[in-house]
Length: 274
Ligand code: DGL
Image (cartoon, rainbow, N blue to C red):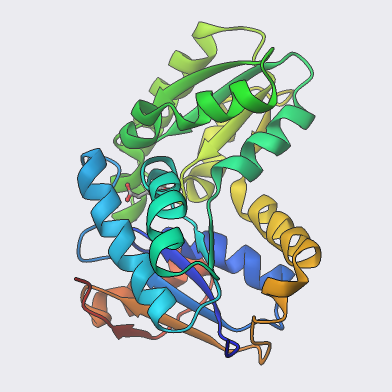
């Protein structure tokens, strides 16, 4: 098989936070990012819809020659990854790989937490799927996970409202609700691409002895490790340091907002999914 870029899929712009950290860690690789901005957010949609949208996005990246695709989106990882790995890849792309963000996060949190009392902030979709609960049960059966769905956090970030009293209200409300459930919580997973942008505000309402787990650097580290352990995949990843970004929505809007998530502006190209 020809060499190709590493694909990164997200429901929209948020995955650029993960892409940023991956590129910092592995700058020599080629990347193809796809944000389904026309249909974002996924977090409030049904299981079937999220699976179909994610399947289409991943297929577009695989058809573009990516040997490996990372689902940067927690909601897509929670609701679509397993079916894509077990059904679609096996049938249509047996030599490719698709990885999500849940397993690396759970592996990390199990090592960091001393009390085994873990908190999670996520979209309603991620929380309802119980994917983190199931993964934690497999890897660290003695640990307890307390999940808090934060439906307003993504819209606040998307609308650039992170510095407003509204953001403060909603962050405080969910932080207090989570902490009230278990005073023993010592680690909290920020299980959504958008939450790193709320990190300073979240920190204000979470005591300093509690670790807040930002997924970007962690996913980047695990990808690095994966490529070292899988030379048969790594050798098929092109390494010219290039990056292309695709959007299903308006290119103008995409370009305007990339800097919020990526730290600098990127120029998107339009793609239709079906
Ligand atoms: N990318 C999604 C996630 O990480 C957040 C945005 C959405 O709901 O689509 O869960």
